[in-house]
Length: 102
Image (tube, rainbow, N blue to C red; front, top):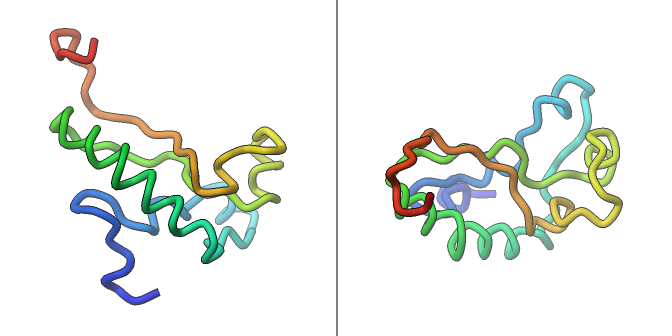
């Protein structure tokens, strides 16, 4: 993947969706298959980037793409959308109860 292709949007990069501390610790290959890239781009462009802009706070990807083996080891559902690039676990820094989304 070329350097320009790693940036999905202004605030998100492809490597955020692939990184897994557990995969690193266990030496697992969590490489991103080319067939899930369109789904990750769609998730990022249509959902995550708009949420990031709306909340005006950083958003951190805790779990994005998971290989079948990684998904099994973390206790993910056998048909988890993480394996299709269609799901993400994220956290935000904002915990302000006066924000309109609360």
